[in-house]
Length: 306
Image (spheres, rainbow, N blue to C red):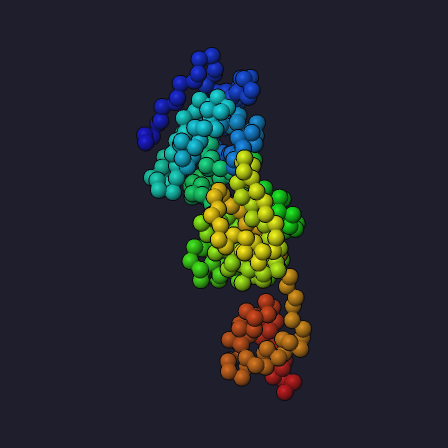
């Protein structure tokens, strides 16, 4: 890769700063120097927004994860800009070059292979470089797999937690699931088709087999599938099957019931027999979810009562 990649020649009769929709050529207005985070389709190319297309057509540089994937989108809409590779393996070397381009007065549009940049991709580092340099970072919203899965799952969406990819190793995966067990929000995770069976089994055991969930596969694509069931039912369904495609797992919120005052006192009385007050309060906080300071104060009050 060079510092100044050559622009790809525009098709005959099409302006270099334009895009086409259904054969109609539309001019793209100039962009200010900035980093533009442009969402792209997660499957169906028809989900690209008009603003996103205009931004890509007008950008001086289009930075992307995989140039082969990005060319499919650009060619679909007659965008002449040549994609410029920026991914996990070259981010340290290429990131500063892109920032230099913006400092020099150019516009850089960042896209991922699918969906919204910075969601489980190296774009976060580039954004931090831009902010550290005092540059503008402008989001251009559009398709997002976590949001598409959330609304398709039928599960509560007033509050949700996106957990990215769960760890591959079983113990680390179970530890992460337990950490989210009582979160009062719908949980959303990315997962691999090769691991979804094991993930569902771990989730059923750690979060409860009767907890509602949904496996959303190949969203917006030809073989889109949303399977809704309990974690136990889904674990059984995916236990011995070969699954393909990109997957988003959505799990219903936990139902946290705070312990009664009597239960708290019982836990504290048990812990204080073997631990100093500070450590007892910390352990009680882990068990009950209550603030450590509240529990420590209660320990002191129990001591005075005795």
